[in-house]
Image (cartoon, rainbow, N blue to C red; front, side, top):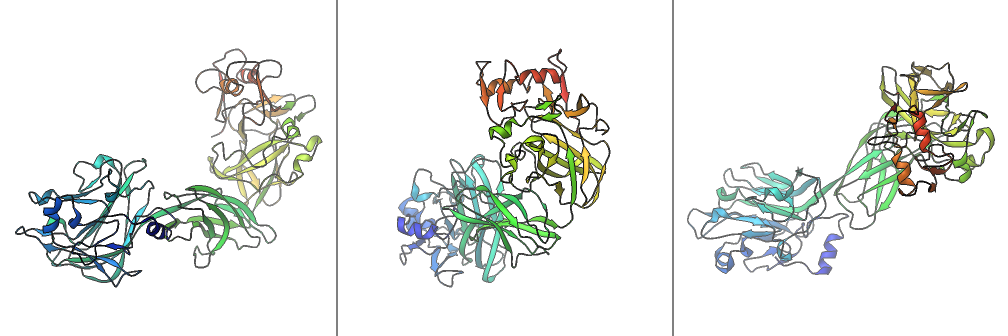
Length: 575
């Protein structure tokens, strides 16, 4: 099995957008008419490791054939008799090498010769399935097979003790005794045994059933390919669209097949019935990476339906999109939450500080997805001009509002990132609008969270509709879930600060405490050092993270847990 020249290799791989086996359409051949003809990059028993005696006496089992599924040629494999009585040579083709011996033919196998590029096929991607096209003309109940393994180090088929090196395996068997005269597609998934990265792919195609094969059993193969799923994960599965307003969101995609070159990955929206006959492209990303985030926009006026699907599609047919359900609604609820964060709160002015805005460090995009919150909706990035507003309506930071199931408050129906002003009003990214959710009018538990404060939730459901409903978490009259979910400062209720790790507990000492990250942030050695910027360690949100000295962030944590017992904790009151 000699490798193709670099030019031929380029011509072969350029037809694919992702890693494939070389010459898997069997268009390039060597040794035609010699009795040992083989497709380039593939080998049969005529080029086994058994030496000249075995190779010269072995019958020809592989031919170039016309009548291909595509292109000009396919491979024709045919079982033939050998010089050994009662032993037939299975029509076998591999992208590795055949191990053969006259002493014990039953000990034969195909293998990857990792030390010789003539007898191996490198592969570091993780395909999801193996496909190809076949025709068969079996004798009796004979049948062929197609098998592939992704592996590291040594690899053989049959395994002969190399199973521990297998990353994944796929096998397809033709129906015993079934003649298939027209080109027919087969498809079989890879079964993965671990998350490791393979080094090689070893594949074998046969005309018949191993040592039981019958003379003149014949099989034709063409267009063998590796399929890579394109998985789509939208930032939300429900958006609100009206006649005058579209919807923006993102779709994360990933695939096991690294593109060979930068290529377009398009997000497609189906029709209202979930069909992709005439899809609408709502986002595109040109990349050579195996994953990415694609910004998407659904146009205003798109019809509402809960039967939509979205998928990530590539021009290559060897990327297989995996659709996910999607809902477009014109129903909405509006609410006007109010919340105060104790970290930047001043009980004298009854306002929060806006140091982060003044310093220009509030990010234009919401921070909660990066903190591990899933399904975060957001109308978009902060509007131009929103952060230039001063006074009571100046922006303090991003917050996260949740609507929870009226029958199970632990079930989050929707999450949306919004902005909190100095006076506690929570508004959309334009700095003025109420917070909207694409859900039907109903009763919901409402929760509010912040990246370094403990969240709180209403103890009772709130009736929400298309008319904005106030939910005032600063009011002593609002009953919240759990015990002491908020802290009273003067006549106002505020969220507990100090949740530096953005988990569900404020800790001053012990494992996973919130104090140590502050010391780490400033360098870990000089406690009087400081660091500026938008950070969770900046508990009082003055844009300066401090471990010691006036207005430091460490003391706030000790105060929250009681101020005397450093091992005490304060736990978030959310179900």
